Length: 145
Image (cartoon, rainbow, N blue to C red; front, side):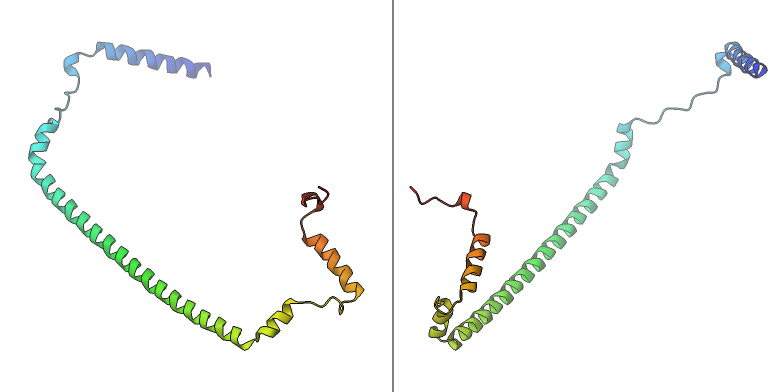
């Protein structure tokens, strides 16, 4: 293990001395710099105008498709509204027919309940259910003034 550490340190030292011995003229020549961005813009200006026109055409196509989809959805909504109004009239007519079939006396009779016909068991059930279904006594107004 100690030998391995010694070899690594010796390698690093030799690498440092080799860099110091090299001459700057022996170093690799650097690659030339790329042209400035202004020079690139002049050569591609015509291409950009072509891409702008293509982009404008693409935007127009997307807008017309969007308008077409909107108009289609609007038309579908209008049809749906018309169908719903037709259904509403049909249901209203059915309700009128049902009201005409049941006489007014029968409707009034259903609303009234004769307490004399009820038994004591039914009255007790009614009181219990009223206590269950009504609001609690704590929330009721007291009638003691």
